[in-house]
Amino acid sequence: MGRTPCCDKSKVKKGIWSPEEDAILKNYLNKFGTGGNWIALPQKAGLQRCGKSCRLRWLNYLRPDIKHGGFTQDEENIICNLYNRIGSRWSVIASHLSGRTDNEIKNYWNSKIKKKLKATKTNSNTKTTTTTTAPSSSNVAAATSTNSTVDEVTNFPVPENFMANGLNANADQPVFLLEGFKYCSSVNNNTGLFSQTQQDSYLFNSPSFGMDENYGVKGFQMDEYSYEVLSNVLSNGSPLNWY
DNA sequence: AACTCTATCAACCGCCCTCCC
DNA sequence: AGGGAGGGCGGTTGATAGAGT
Image (cartoon, rainbow, N blue to C red):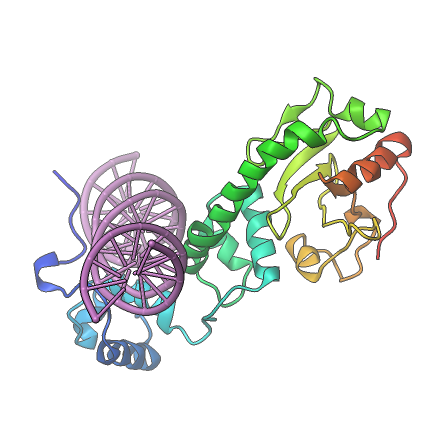
C-alpha cells in the first residue's frame, strides 16, 4: 500500500519547460491564481504537467518577484550566517533574501559555498597547527588551552567563553562569538576594528543600521591579528571600537 | 577538432506536515 | 479522532554548457 500519486505519471510531460508552457502557466495564474489547488491546476490551464511541477516552475522561475543572476557578497554572507545557525533549512534562509528561492540558494550552496568551505577546511587544518602556537599573549594561550573544543565546521579550536560562528563572508576565516552576544561581524585586519553591515542588523531585527549596545560586536576572526583582539577582550572585557 | 571532465542549475522524487472532511 | 489529499521542503538527478586536454 503505497501513497496515492498526485497525478498519472504516464500522462504528464516531464523535463524542461518550453516557452509555450511557461506562457500558458503564467497567463493562467495571472488571470485565475492557483485556486488553492495546484493538483487540479494543470488540467484547468490545459497543461500536461504534474501539479507539483507547475507549482515548482512558478515558484522557482515564473514568479514576477524572482531575482535571477549571481549572488552578491551580502547575500552570500547571509546564507553562510544562517546556514551555520539553522542548517539546511533553505526555505527559511530564502525568506531572508528577497527574490531568491530555496532551490536557487540550495544550488548555490552546493555548487559554490560548500566547495569554498571544503577548501578552507583543508587550509585550516594546516593553519591550526601553526597559528595555535603562534600567539604570544598568555590570555590567548589560556583561551586555546585543553579546555577549548574544536569547531566541527572549521576545525579550529574554539577558545573558552567563545562559540564557533562558521566562516566569514569570504569563507577564508573562522569566526567566533563571545558567548552571550548575538552577533559577530568581521574584523578589519588593518584597523583592528569591527564592522557592522546592513544585513546583519536585518538578520537580528536590530532597529536600525547603527546598532545599540545590546547588539554589540564582540567577536573575532581566528587570524593572527585577531588573537590580539581576543587578548583584549579576555583580559579586560572592554568594548571594542566600531567603525 | 574531438573528446573528457567539471560545474551549474532546473526539475523531479519522495517524505513529512497540515488541513479539512 | 483519524484518515486522506494537497502543499512544502530537502535531497538528488540529469541535461547542458564551458573548460581543459
